[in-house]
Length: 162
Image (cartoon, rainbow, N blue to C red; front, side, top):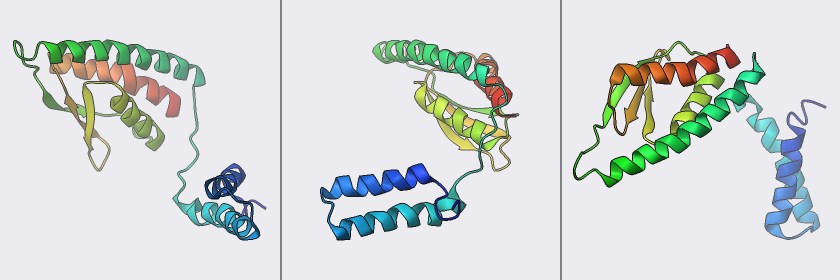
């Protein structure tokens, strides 16, 4: 049964979405929806990543709260930087951050965090996953930023996933 339906919820969702998009429950749409619901998850199963093993789930709540706070603070800092750019231009820079985090799920979460927090852009990850190239909108102190990034985001993700 697991071979035919490796992701039953996905199969059901694809079937329902097919019928909803076509606004018809004709026999042809039922057949196509069933085929889509069964075949898509089976054909895509090799592409699905391995399951994540969360080690310390309570750290997730702390990390979410910290990211939420950083989003608010960074929004204000970027807005201030944009508004005063004609007098004091921001010091944008690319910085290399050495990483200890190697778990694929942790790196994916780290990339989402840097995408959500204004003023930072994930630019490149080394092939061996040891260094992250990050663009920062207004960099005051590179060493302090790297320490903040590693302490605030990387260490909790390492606790969660490694």
